[in-house]
Image 1 (tube, helix red, strand yellow):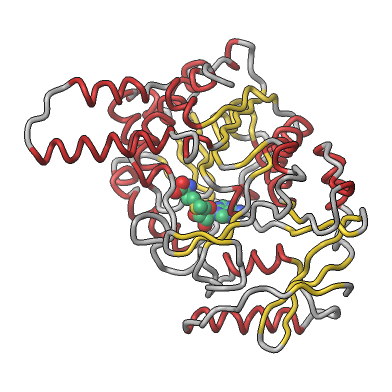
Image 2 (spheres, helix red, strand yellow):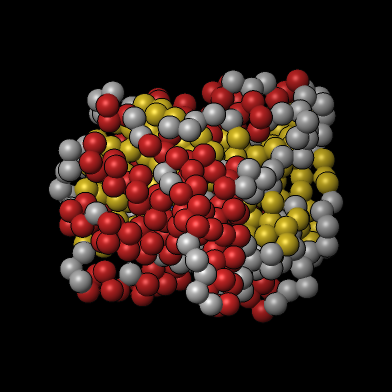
Length: 403
Ligand SMILES: C[S@@+](CC[C@H](N)C(=O)[O-])C[C@H]1O[C@@H](n2cnc3c(N)ncnc32)[C@H](O)[C@@H]1O
């Protein structure tokens, strides 16, 4: 242990928050160094099997939760993603099965919007579908099962599995996710006297506090070589995150794809923007009842903890693992290329029939604007990678308005 940095006050705990704090304290006390990595702390705060934020039965996404995601704003998001998936099926020459693997499906809204769109706009594609969901939290799996019952009852193949259980080179179709990678536990690192150090979590008089020590794994130092940024030249005190789980995930996904695409939607930046000296405190953010802050040691188990995604790492790891990078764009441009602008025009060009109709249109128009706003969801990154594709199969409408 080399240095201690005090954090803000820990939470006034609810019952399950208190149980999670006891669990974390126990974990720390069982280690020889009396400290755990921040990635371990975050992993348990979010996914501890009984008390973790994502594990518990509670509303997290939407008006009554802590944050919104695109599928919760309007069905248009899932419908336009579905349009892109249908084009992938077309250019792959209509394989059967065409397997969609949604990873981190939350409340199942995106799945439901995609299936609804395909069933009504491209029934041939719909009939070729096999839908797999890879979801870590049991509570979400139950919610997804219930939301997708109508499709399951109508005979569509919808299954839940772990990524590990998908055999290598077995999927012809598309692996996709919205706001999955930002929910992976990250390591916190800092620079001290031109050396990369790691931030660990320990306890001190009933509080969690941070301590700085040597990195728990050389993979953290290798990571910066890999993404081509030398953070050690940054001033002492610079801190940021490293998402080692993301590169492991990318490799696993690439290995399981036989032919097709990987579509990743999340907030983040390319490496040189992410690891910029002008961002000296990193991107770690916590969401609690629609407000955000940067203290992961309050509301433990009752708030989301996230970090932005380093898209360069996903791209490079994908290339290392046999994927071609087809393009990187922003959500706003992706959705506009797929027809969101036409939907906006249609909203204003048809006559309103009642005050209720007017209210609904205004609210939908507002949602569509939020989906493309460059300062909000529209500024999210969209990375599309592919495997075993001809040049023609690499040209996708969603990438036609790339920056
Ligand atoms: C921020 S939510 C996004 C949910 C949904 N995609 C949406 O857009 O509303 C993150 C989701 O990823 C799930 N998740 C986190 N880590 C995961 C992992 N390693 N494998 C599968 N699902 C994971 C969480 O349980 C949660 O359902």
